[in-house]
Length: 552
Image 1: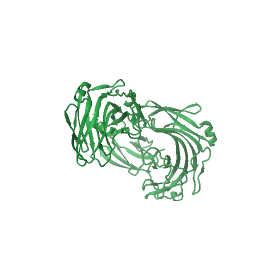
Image 2: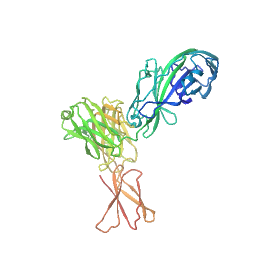
Image 3: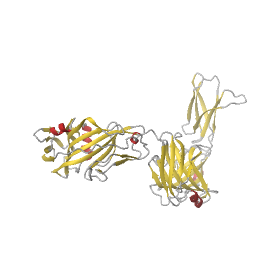
Image 4: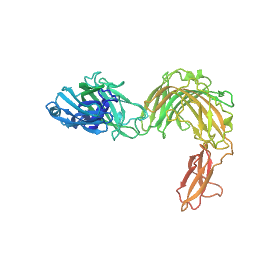
């Protein structure tokens, strides 16, 4: 048990203390502790020197100039500064008998020499007590591979005899001791008391692949002093603490998944959009996998029917279109949907998402449609649309601009859960200059989404309703044909720089002869961008020819 642990308790437990900026001492504590470590799913084990007495005081603006603790029996323990606003002292022991021999129960005299509050001598009754039971984390195995994209609930054994007047604290620290998560301090709203047996680490707290230290603390007070005044309360307490490793798993196999119902519209002029011909209503069950991380999946409907995922456009999921919203609801009724994802590295994940009966958002409409048919790609262009009726900060808006034969959008606002994503109050987005290529007609999708269910159990899970409008955007100027320049990179080796339409997928091919019949061999795919694409052919050729062409 070291000074860092003691200071952690003193500074963050703040047992009953109230910090007022006017006083030189903001809180002080006399503490007896018993420390354990847990390295398996079994019982925690005491440290080699598990017992410790510590005196600690926090000060404001360096107002504490010195102090000591008078121990029952006549010995004195001097406080020493261990930070700009903290003082402490203490000793560690192998046995509780040795601890109690040096620091017995009785009356302690706390002396403070301060800059503004004068000299203070406080009589502190610290009765002999017993240490709380050792906390044991019950979710030890699960804590060794936490998915950072989901919430994680740690559970532990009960504080035997724990009461609402006792205190429990859970924290997570980095390797250098920086706390990245902690439950509330004693007396604060939401603090854990002696009956608490769990705490939840929110999604996004941990970094994939990193190892942390978790701590669970059980504490019980055995004396208080309010003689310092100005609302400052000192506390004497026994506490037991267990520390254990926590590890965040590597990046998850899924970024986001969901079950959504949608209505699809088309806008062909400045007027209001209309439902697309054919089957405008759709169900989409999707899982945005990372590097093919979803091996298979299924969805259980509210009526108990289980449908397996199918493969389409390189992703697994379910898509179906309907003539009417009634037909859609007949096959995919309102209720609770259960998504099962069989992943490459995260095992089988089962998550439920609610999809109650609701209405589709209003149809998105581009307000500057005419201007969007003659966009100068060399300057910024702001796209304006109608308001999302009833849209709020928990709703979602997205615009996507894609070349007809491109695999990736040339411009797209962020996905749900990503930094910079648009909420339901957004009515515009700006396409930066030189994002689009001249002389091109792009397909635009403008979407309003309302989420009725959000889950962080695994990756970001979403359920709800959307309305999406398709339209075109055209740039002025002459269309850009793909080009490739070649420079020598070494003896009979060549470096290529290729350009093309932003977002368009291209293929670089090569052949050793231009004598028919040609034998063009694929080399590498790339997406067009303003910076172009660089590639070095590592094979030595006495003669070689290259070309670049667009592909779907």
